[in-house]
Image 1 (cartoon, rainbow, N blue to C red):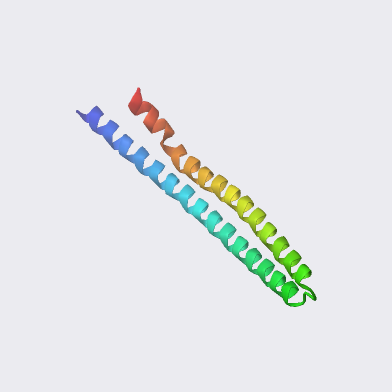
Image 2: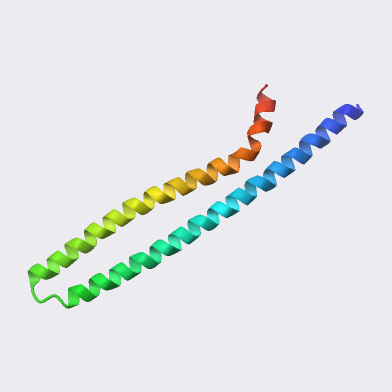
Length: 110
C-alpha cells in the first residue's frame, strides 16, 4: 500500500513539474509570437505610410498605378512570409509544450 501511495505521489509530482514546464514553454512561445506580430504591424504601417507618400507625390496616373502595384505586391509577399513564420512559431510552441509530457505518456501507454 505504501509503495502504491509513493508511486502515486511521485506521478503527481512529475505531472506538476511537467505542467509547469509546459506552461513555461507556452508563455515563452506566446511572448515570441506577440513580439513578432508587433514587429510586423510596425513594419506594415511604415510600408503603408511610405506608399501613401509616394502615391500622393505621383505626377501621373501611370506612376500612381505603379506605386500601388508595388505596394500590393510587397504586402502580399510580406503576408505570406509572416504567415509562414507564425506557423513555424505556433508549431514550435506546440512541440515545446508537449515535450515535458512525452515520458509520462510513454509510460502510460506501456
